[in-house]
Length: 218
Image 1: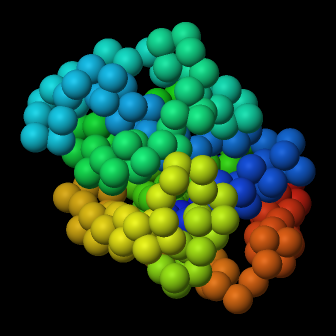
Image 2 (image 1 turned 180 degrees about the horizontal axis):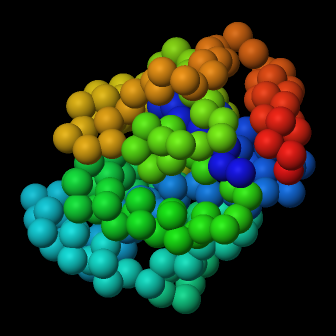
């Protein structure tokens, strides 16, 4: 069974997907962390956004290992903290907009999920990566709400205004990508989380997940 969750940056996808996967006993897949690992790899190798071919090459060379808790190992080193740095935040949306990079990451995600009950979250899980997912969820929230949430979790030194501008920039890039643009699947369960607590969001999504799981006889 595949539960696919989409939504813009800072809407709570990672937290909800992690909670749902843990309580269902499913594998948690955070595609965003894979894009962040590739972005970090490009930074470490001094390859900038003006060198798309270089980034594509590095995406194919990077040794990325995905752990069941969603953490990432890059070339044998755990890099969870570095993935959330301001430097990675500044380029990850542009890196993920490169079609060839998306193809590489989608292939990684499919291999991770093969034969396993999974909760996968990202920007195009419900429309491109898992268009036949058993349950599709689209989480949303206003840019202001998402910026405030990120600011409270933030340890990169960015101000609230910087985080808001970064989120708005990422929204624009995500919605206009040549491949994997952020869209609401027609058959997705849409949930605006702006005025909801994390617990309230969890309860709604978990209830939907349980219903689909039981319907499919899991």
